[in-house]
Image (tube, rainbow over the protein chains, first blue to last red):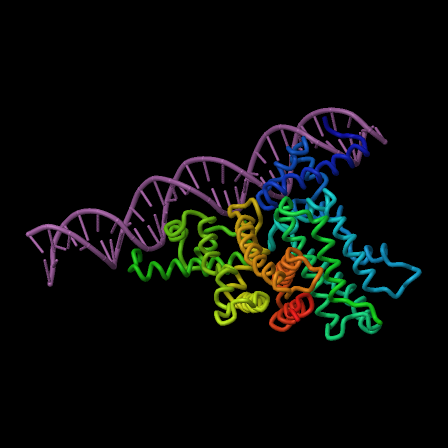
Length: 206
Length: 206
DNA sequence: ACAGGCATACATACATGAATGTAAACTTAC
DNA sequence: GTAAGTTTACATTCATGTATGTATGCCTGT
């Protein structure tokens, strides 16, 4: 039954993206055919090619649905009353990011990005990761630098190292947990790791 | 000119594995055909199918050439004179692992494992990672637990969290650096991160 | 020691299957 | 009626696995 109403068309687009998430997770991106995605969504390849240019385009749209840059996370948690608490802001933003990661869609898409697709493929996943990482690093470096100037960083620790440690820890935790989420409860382990990091490596000025 | 001598045959096998590393890095595992690998090695698919059952088998052999479990790293660094310095052993083993990672072949293969192949594909890369991670975790947990019993761990930090933090940090650093090794010098940043971690989170008993 | 025979180490050819992109047909909303 | 949404049909490309070809290294009997 061809030609749905405008709203219905938009709905099928979302359905196709949902289907893509599902199939990508199981088969991996490169081994998934557009046919499989279409069938999962209860349609044919024609629908896919109508809404998206090709697999790369579809993939990109799928990622866009969950994209949430650190910049915005920080805007959410930064306390307007206390504009100079960079480390506390970072801690909260990190914890908040960890919570978002556990939401089903976010979890699925990040699993796909980290484990079910490869570089130099249809989709340039490395460029996506690179872009996100650079933005994260720049934003975090600002905050760590401010913290250091305010004497809130334990002496002897350079902002760059602290920054890279946090990024590595967070990224590594994501990568490791998403590989097999049943192994441990990230809602418990994650915050303990993050809090331990901030409590130990980072010290309020006297 | 078919049929080489036994030693030459072994040499072509290695050549094929080298070729695989090269092509996998550029095209990604799933998008590389055995034809491309064979041509890169200056042969035909016949040679590939002679030495390996299929792409998965070839991939597995490629990984085996660099596989170096943490257990062995620890055996290398553990001081027989001072059998009770678990944290120092871990620090050294971690630093040593970091150095190994920078060796060209190790670097290539790990890049492929982390960025150029996907789960649920020909090769079960998740199983490989899982296996390594489990062994690492178990071994490290032993050492962290011993350290805690000896009062060498900062009070208030549980061995499990310390263990997972170190694993996440190391894994995240690998993942991040290998994505674009030109961004920073891991030979400089890596040890500083690791040493900072051990210096700050882990404390010699009084 | 060497001549045959057999297994080895590849190359070539072929059959199959599957995915892609596009074009054309069809149906209904607007 | 026309354009948006979707299906069906088709042509092309490409990787895989296998089967077959073939020349050489290696070994065994005498």
